[in-house]
Length: 440
Ligand code: S3P
Image (cartoon, rainbow, N blue to C red; front, side, top):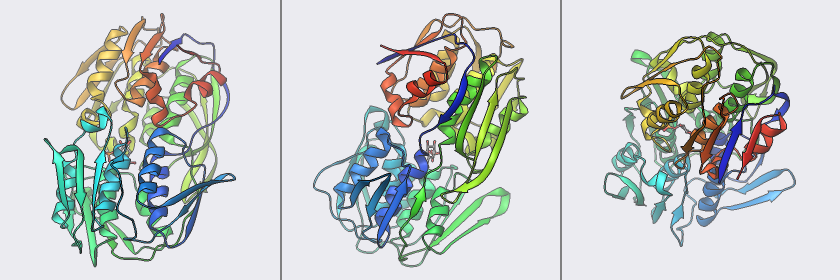
């Protein structure tokens, strides 16, 4: 599917965004481990989350759609059944990595596969700790998918020092740790998103979080708990909110409201950076939903100033750099984003994809191994008129669709069906706010 976008009149209105992808994956997975029936409202109905649901169903978990909720019949920690077929996680790194942690706790062999994008993504970061716990993983060359996981009769708890601040790695180890007798600890170089910890605590797990030397963060979980079922409403995804939000900042005269957006501090780095750029975003009606802080964001279009985004911001906004780069393209001055080498191993190499797409649209960009610099036009529409291939990356697709709303000749995105990975209804939501987007 091609998606074309054209310079738009001011955006206006209120948008209700889809549920948080990270929380939705975890709600399904943790619900499967509970003793009893969990009820989840507002679960994200996207391709990635469907893939995790199908994998859990293949592992014997009953998941049903009741009126307004998703109902999961938990099997208890260690209660999954051997699957009869390969578990295909599609495009979902979160689904694949978290499930690998779960599978390591079961004394059977399961095969994990994914699409062309997921097959390119590094899995050693998860395989190494799981093998240290006693699981056997047979992977395709380069520690990639497809792979097979066989859990030992008894998993060993470990203390693992992760080289990357990755919530997927941390969560895979914690999920495996639930199946091991004793305490499993994982230390990460900086705090990554903490939804797994929040939800495990809500389910009655014994879990400790501490800051250790150099700002590193350690999470310790006690194995073999009895987890209470979840009752949860999923907040709107801040990573999805970023697209209409930046569209409204860039299209002059816009005012929009984004309802019930997740404001967990391990996720909200983009909002802080935008405030530093002079963005007019106010938060109203702060409250808690599903154990997470949320608020309504009111966003007004206006000029942005370039900023330096230091490396320590990366974990709290790792998925937001492509759309931030689009905002930077219209800001006054040169925005530099450092310490973002992880973008090279996302759904596609996002550093390369952002640099190539912006250049094709006439924006001045410099890129290094782990940094990106964008020289903005101070609000003057870039030429645009380019075609960008999404390459199985939903956030690349949405970022360039937003750029087209403020580029002289618009933009065209090829392979835009990948947007369904995280943001079903993106085109309808954006056009509802007045954006000129068209599929072909
Ligand atoms: C996610 C963690 C992040 C993020 C991804 C979702 C999660 O990945 O990029 O979109 O739900 O745990 P890493 O753990 O690789 O940083």
